[in-house]
Length: 90
Image 1 (tube, rainbow, N blue to C red):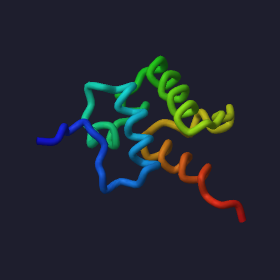
Image 2: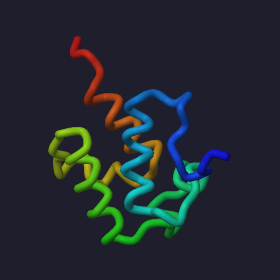
Image 3: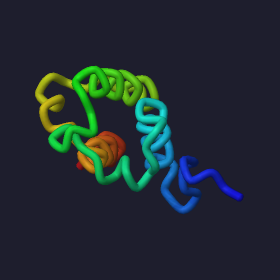
Image 4: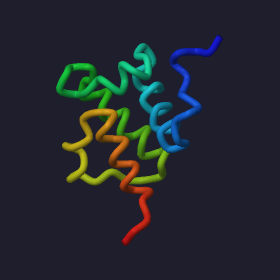
């Protein structure tokens, strides 16, 4: 039987890596709860957010700028941010 907290093999590598970041900061939440949670809903506190930012920066070898910090308030926002980082420049 598979662990419900393990990343989904049908997700992209980038999404799996991001989900692992979230799972390391929020070990008591399922992937569905992670996707649905946000800072506004009270799922995260400020310490969790700072920790999550540090984990994501390390995992993706990026430095998240001050101007981006206020927009990173949900799993979807982080997913979109990471996707933009890895998108080819036009």
